[in-house]
Length: 200
Image (cartoon, rainbow, N blue to C red; front, side, top):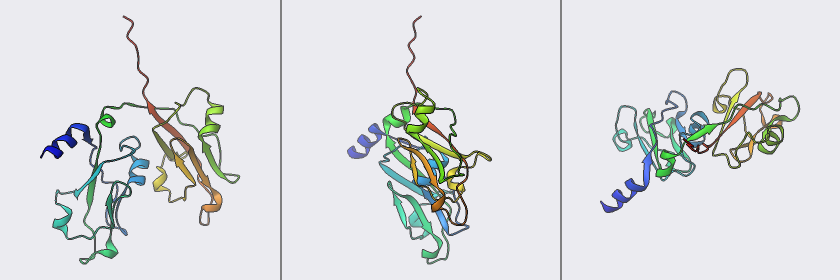
């Protein structure tokens, strides 16, 4: 009980996430996909993961066999691994350090410095800083990448990524794609909000 009380004092919960359902190969609530579709909503280093079905049942109650349920991968339940033939529909949330819930994130404008006509779409942070000086903080916390034409999250495109990092930026190489080239992407960065001083 004391340990649980200490964890409660130094941590907080994210919202519940349910980005996928098991109609395809299974239920994939991976950290990569969640961060891409809900930028700024999951801390960089979760302490714990919690999983239950969308109607409130525990994993044990479903009898499902999980491929992953951890703070590195996130959650994966594959239909092919189930004795009953399919996964239930799950939702997940994460325990994060308490300062994450108190932290305010301010987003930059969208940047689109490159097109995928050459080797790919390169939206690297050093290049963006040269073109847009003083518009991106020194150490971005999050990155958000979407298609220029339809505002589609990167995870919905099915494209293979070369770089996807808030401190490096984004790169998609045409040579890594299967039978197509990279889409045209735009990026923005989540930064700590600057403090304002009340001089009145």
